[in-house]
Amino acid sequence: MKLLLRQAVGIDVAQNELVVALGRMDEAFLVDIYAHKTFSNSASGFEGLVDWVSSRTEPGIGLRFVMEATGVYHEQLAHFLAGKGLEVSVVVPNKISNFFRTLEVKTVTDKTASETLTRFGLERKLDSWKPPHSLYRRIRHLTRERDQVIADRTVAKNQLHAELAGFEPLASSVKRINQKIALLDKQVKEITTELMALVKRDEEIYRQVRLMSSLPGIGLLTAATILGETNGFELIRNKRQLTSYAGLDVREKQSGTSIRSKPTISKKGNSYLRKAMHLPALAAIRTDERFKAIFTRLVGKHGIKMKAVVAVQRKLLEMTYVLFKHNSTYDKSYLHNSPLPQETL
Image (cartoon, rainbow, N blue to C red):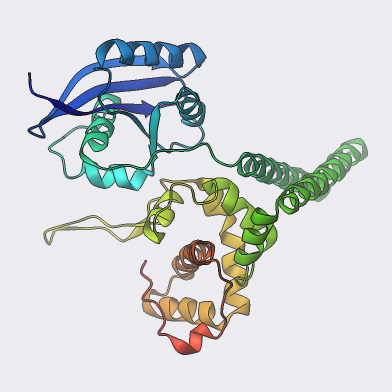
């Protein structure tokens, strides 16, 4: 038998199950994916996964568990494996999608997805995942809770409007809806206060938030949301990965001369992050000459305002990463020192 160089476990993570493929690479760099199994996405499933992998792998040979960043469903498993001292890599989805397109695979199933992750872990040099700062996780929890309360408040306000617009509105119903709105207003304030206190508790995180909020349209809440949803840009290595993670990357289908679809954003990413950038983009267009110029040029190009707004969303998000990475604040004079970026969409 040839000498083994690497071993990898590819895990396609869903809400309720883990579809697993086990593979190895030998000294001739040949990949062999030799075992498959499905486990529940639960504590007992995690234990069963580790036992199954241990019984089918060679000790002393590098072993890596590879999974995609799938919302929140992968988090418990990643923490469990890292807690046992195992090598774990969590990969942003666009990396796996691009790698998948290079393979001779015609169908996309949970099994082929797990095999792709296994092969990716064997053929690429990957960073080891480390549990994120606990404050990032708490920040994300609070920003998502706040977002949901605001959505509930919007529903209640719409109910109130419908009730008052109708014939002879029922006073008791109006009273209860107003009470509900008042309660939701109180909860929004409580969550916001708790969130800001949490951010300010850690000097480094508060400094990061202030750096990003130097951008036009980006306030402390938006900056905190970005840090929470990206775990402090934990998996992000460049701007393209970040826009893909948020689902703001452009997708265009073209084949020969007969098939050509209009470019759109993929929306295959973190919807909370994507939603958080909408209002800041509108504010940036109103208040900053650089973003206003980007918006005006794109509207003049294709005449669709929403596409131009999405392009500004993407540019703003990319710039938060740049400021974070370079430990700097936004330079408004940059507009006069460099050409406008060639945004597409």
